Length: 250
Image 1 (cartoon, rainbow, N blue to C red):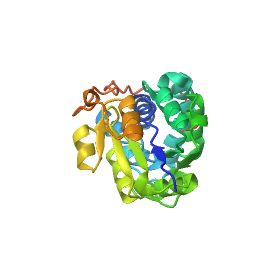
Image 2 (spheres, rainbow, N blue to C red):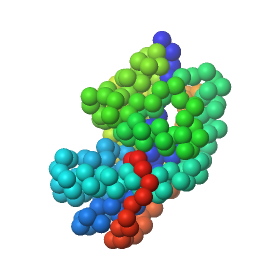
Image 3 (cartoon, helix red, strand yellow):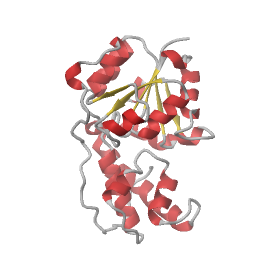
């Protein structure tokens, strides 16, 4: 069995957390909630309906939750996907191309549903770099359970002990450890370097080129490994305005 590399998307390959947090915050405020930026940001990368329910104080199958999810999905294209390749973090395209040149199978394991993951990867121009895309609605249990990672490995014909998962959250690390994958955590996404290390990350790095150094060579450049990179996600005011949404997908 081969060595494979499996990736998260939001906060790992694409600088989507700030855009998604702004959109989620605007949607739930339009329905009467008043969450802090930190509370909203903490939902990024997690299943949408459960996140919205938590912020709204409703249950997953409540009609208010369903309305919030519908508003979010209608606006996702115009508010997020329209940014296209500009959403990618520095070095992602070049790094993925290095891995493809090395003939390593690549996969995605994300808490997004398949339609939105596919749309985001396509909009950013990197969909064709991946051999499989495994999403929350394709398995029985999502993160932090190992199901998505294990299905990705099965699709790629890869052995967990020889393969790696790359993500930016504690939940990512817990899923990867449950699947017995080695891990690289990036400190420029949602969770801090300290939290990622505590969750069992084998390496914590400050930029995507350092991820590639580890995956291909086993050692990152020391200058790129920091306790905490300057976060690309910066707090912004979440206004209470709620224009009638347009667009599609989540």
